[in-house]
Length: 206
Image (cartoon, rainbow, N blue to C red):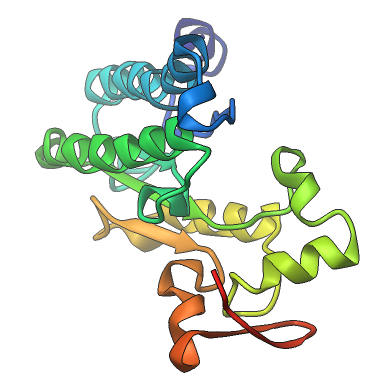
């Protein structure tokens, strides 16, 4: 893939590591194949793409008229790098792995002007989680987890990626930008355990 990109475009300046799958099951029902497929795509896939991108960034070096960095690498993670998720342990483990992969990667090539950051989306309206927002009732339940009061969309994540890929963020490396409407702020713990949804106040009894 990278060989074709370099042959076609001349080089690669930016990598956005944005591939992920879910194979959900409770611990006792989760197969080894379910575990390994998610780790392979969500974590190993990001490692392989990051390695090839870094090789190209270092081969080419800084080209001042293109950017003040040799390259920008952006890993797409998830709020579940911080929030545990029962029934989805393979997914959560892979995303926590992406967080440490990103910060460890950021240490290595920084002196060669390669920046490595990540974006951790929360609930974003995509096909992978359509069941959680497809109807008004489902979306109202989801909103109980989001302090900002709306489910995100792909443009929210894209705008964050554009900023991290630009020279406007040149002094930023090793950072995770949460695009989550406040999901990692533990909304269920506000007001002494009462959650507020888009459809009114409800007592958290979980």
